[in-house]
Amino acid sequence: GKVAKVSEANAPIAGGDDNGEENEDEEYEEQLRLKSFQLDTVKSSLEDIRFMPLPNSRDFLVCWHEHVSVLESRTGLCKYSLTPDMQTLACIREFMTVKQKLNALKCINDKKLIGFGDTSVHIWCYESGFILHTVDLKLELGLIVCCFLHIEENNDNTLMMWQMHQSEDPASSCNRKVVKVIALNLYKATWYIAQSYDIALASLSITSESQQWALDDNHAGHRHCLTFDSGELLTLSLNDPTVCWTNHPRLEKDLQRADKGSLHIYSRLRSNDGGIDLYRPRERILNGGHWNGGRDLVFLSDQLLTVKTIDEYMQEESRR
Image (cartoon, rainbow, N blue to C red):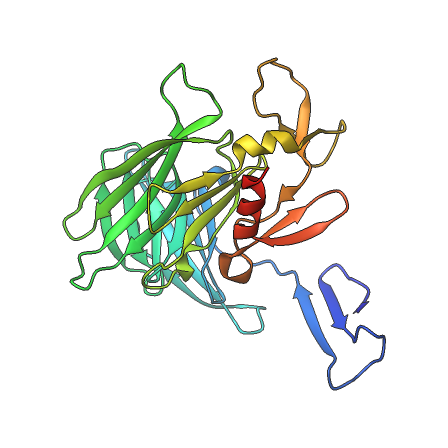
């Protein structure tokens, strides 16, 4: 292929035949444009602002927490739509606000937007901007690694959430995390902990994850994949909340000493000798299930870029 000169604001890329022969009928050109927009002025700190692109659209959402007065604060949300040429804003829609501060946003199936506060869950329709449910669980939510809406015919829908946190047991290893599966009945506004178990995992810093807005109606064969800055991979079954898989115990075999100043440096998974050397995985997982409908993983080593299905990777690891 041919790559044209890249300017500061325009990066045209032209594709050609592999054999070098040009065919004007088959040639195409893609433009990578860099564009900035002045959206709004809000009274909020940078760490309290959330950005979320909406699926299969030219829309994106901005969320911020601001103090309206000395005693009152709120979280504002606004959806911005771009024109087809991606050059200007087509329209702006304000979502219904909430009083609680939101720590995370997730787009899930059935065109729902989920906002997580410290103890509260808020659900919007991300097309209309209307808020559909607000439930205070009176439970510290912490890190929600996965959630999806289980839809029933009688509208008795349940929001399934996977919560992960460090074990409160002081004797527990830092390489183990606690996962709780929380089922929230939206019709009755009641919830319970469906499952709770420990997993072998060192990190809580997620680098990528599967997209839950693309789930089909019956979630057949679906799983949620997450990658972490430690090089670890966690796979959760959405059909059976008791089933999960992590490469943590196998990853220790693949660590190599990192050069000082290396771009990708990860803290070594805790060892018995208590050393402070820096290590990194020989092969880094770049994504958590975005490719090929969430069935493929992309791996990067020093010389190779490899694509494997999740099933292939799990089978290879189980034979080691």
